Image (cartoon, rainbow, N blue to C red; front, top):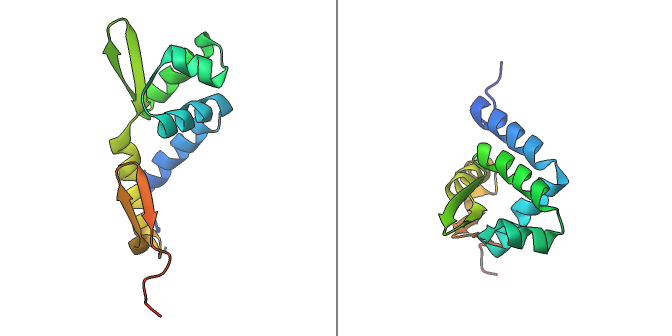
Length: 119
């Protein structure tokens, strides 16, 4: 049997994450947090037009899967993507690609070299 390109753990973890993000509301929440940064529930409700109970429900699922992190600020709970988790997954993914050496991660940005040689 040939060795797998990605580890069994990576495949199982990726599959679980993709199943969680297959829900449109959860994906919208994640995309908003990735784009705009940390946010309280009320702001997510206003920006995404999703009712508060549903936002809270989906944030609970995302938090349970360690995809988002939260912190308390007074009476509000502030949510953000779990940067270390996403960075770890992204690095492993791009390391395995033939083009992996052409991609760098800088903070929240991915930089890709279009051409390495001078003509």
